Amino acid sequence: MKVKLEPQPREFIGRQPPATHRRLREVLHAVESGKVFPEPLEDELDGFYKLKMEGYRLIIQHTSSADGPFFRVVFIERRGTVYEIFRQLLRLE
Image (tube, rainbow, N blue to C red):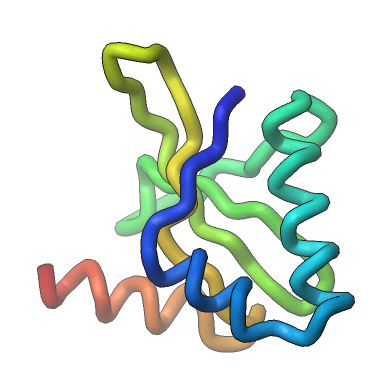
């Protein structure tokens, strides 16, 4: 399934050291190829999915367009803070 990046994840990946940048890209390609599947989130984050990559968490949303269904990566951050920051961002919208 196709994976598209929102601005925050694109910028986050771009700021990472080369090895981390490469591993984040590899896990996204694994989702596209169907080798890795995001896990659904619950409670106020219902409708979103998480993808684990070492000490990072990617928050993904399943959506579709005229071209068909795809995963949209909406947020990436370190494991310890990702969900709290993302919840705060959702409240601001």
